[in-house]
Amino acid sequence: MVASRYNSLFLHYISKQALKIFNFFNVSVERITLDNLVKQFEDHFIPKTNVAVERHKFFSREQLPNELIQDFVTDLINRSMSCEFEELTTSLVKDILICGANKYTQHIKQKLIQEDQLALDKAINICQFMELSHQRSKQIEVDNSEENENICYVSSQSTDRWSRSQTRNRLDLSQNEDYEDQSQRSISSEHMLGKINEDIQSQSPSRTTKERSQSHRRPYANKGTNSNYKRSRCGQKHM
Image (cartoon, rainbow, N blue to C red; front, side, top):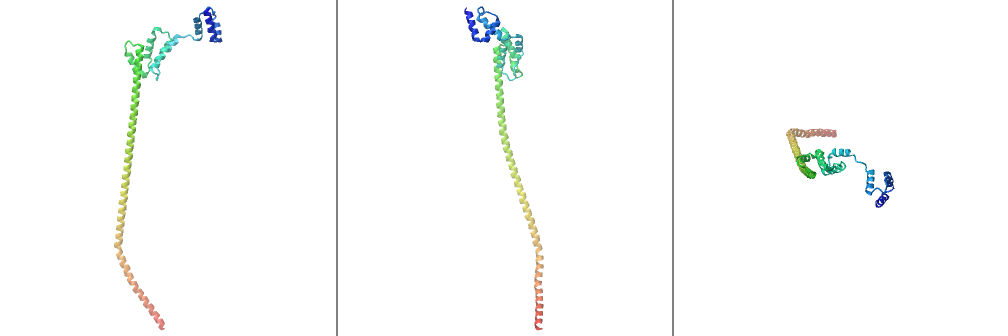
């Protein structure tokens, strides 16, 4: 009576659809126990496990490229639960952990192979320790590369400043050379002009003597013409 009451309450609370499924079992509420009733529903809703397929999934599992060791081991343990390995579960998980390591964790694989009487817990500890050490070494390399980049940047900046200063010095030197060339050209042109003026002045006295002689002759000619003019005027008056 108590079992049938529990069964009735169970069927009442799980829903009407469950009651239809219970009728499909073709069992009596008064004769079946509550545990067997729950097992009947579990067998109905939970599909039967194909052990061969589950074991194939387990043995073909490999570590993904970016997957951590801890995540890989956790997935292996979960897969082993449906494989019915029983006492061999931990040993097989350890074997797949070693065999399924990816190419990025080959150094961990070599370390595990070297260990004698290796248990699963010890293998997991070794993997975690070596993985953490590898991550730290990578971080150190990244920090060193960033520091080297900063040093290269500072050195490049100083080199650029030095090259700019050298360029300015070259420009100033070229400007000074141009200025000196121009000054030398102006001095040479002034020197040439001075020579030309000296040549002109050396030739100018002969010209001035000729002009002076002509200027001395012109007044006498003017005087002759004036005397003739006066004479003609006088003759006209006497006439």
